Image 1 (spheres, rainbow, N blue to C red):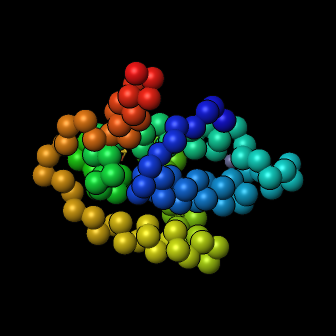
Image 2 (tube, rainbow, N blue to C red):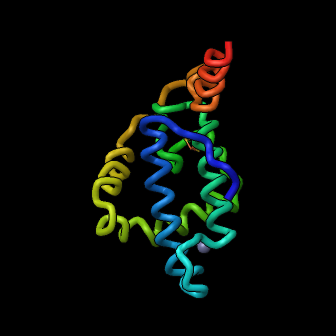
Length: 135
Ligand code: SF4
Ligand SMILES: [Zn+2]
């Protein structure tokens, strides 16, 4: 897995939830075969992909759920991969991580922002913060 960007607030909670769902999916579909606790290459790569998308999401912490997003920045094959993971792991995460599952369900009610905010992405804020530290 390539290095992950640090995400703040709701973006981080969303990332942790998706990470758990990918892990559940991988355990049942891939890495059970080699009996390790590590994600397979495909799932590990997907975790990095999701992390980068959340980091760059222009809505930042007010993002809608990705499935309702008017931009939908995922490549089509990654969108399908996300759908497969959600369908399988969505019902299962309720038992293993009920708090994250509840947060995820509530986030489905988030309004879609009327416009795309300026300079609200995690990436933008992260870079500005780094610049200020290095001044
Ligand atoms: S799909 Fe939309 S909400 Fe999800 S990360 Fe991409 S831009 Fe943000
Ligand atoms: Zn896997």
